[in-house]
Length: 406
Image (tube, rainbow, N blue to C red; front, side):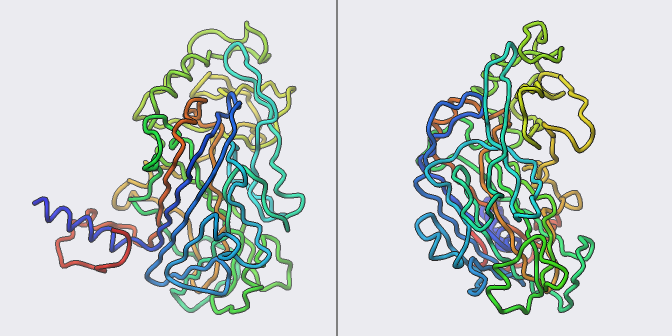
């Protein structure tokens, strides 16, 4: 029985994996968005990607294969000439995003802490936008990992220029995708619970395109005469471990947070009573930063119905803190027809996807002492198969033996 179970698990992996990415972030000395006193360092970040079944990958727009590899040490060699990829520079620091795109620079909007001062019931939050947009021809700033991946989808022969998700193929996140503490890390700190991976589709061209310059030069707003179909829809952001909450993070939250009742974030009378309960095993929203926040906005990091219960009554679309609908591990693990798609790709196309890996500063699990975790291992994959073998109780012969990760 155990042997058969292992064979079934192996078949699942071999059948569904279309694209897998493995990443290691070593020697992370991260600091919490809330306090922020320590330095952040990254010594290595290795990426391996593999595909099967009507998908090919490239890091330079000219060399296509079923597997590609990239690391901090090989970033320039593996990327195309003139790339603006970044491996985090001298360190990672918490940022926040709801995945909105700047269509002028073809980059995702990110916000960093401008100031943070303790309040009677949490911390006053001021933010500024990360300047990755003023000059889009230069490498993105330090503090997060970002790189371009080109995906050639050669199922079908027709290329539809108009942008319409209903014309595109569904892509699913593999069920064995995960973010965990690395082998050399320190377990039970919870640092892995604040990691986010964002997939920003910039644009696409017909799959028969061979000019590498046209492929790597894909932007959101290509102009009316261009062969490029600009995309730049809101990025799909994956939140791993959405139900996992370290006991130390919970204790930090319970100690720092008080229910908010008034407008003035500095007034002790604006806080009274306990905040909402956070327990391990239950998912909670992330009220991520959507725009720059000033002192006049009177924002506390714990603002939101799930935490200090305060509602700013911002107009729709103007929320400074926004509970953006992330793609979570809970969604990834749904079965059968309940499993949601992760993203879509047009048939007979080459799509430029800009991938951001960062620490979400507004995650309730991001607390100051998580920094001792030090190492994070990330791996994820894509598949066109909605169902796993378990979903249909498959009992047939071994399928696609040797494909995909073991």
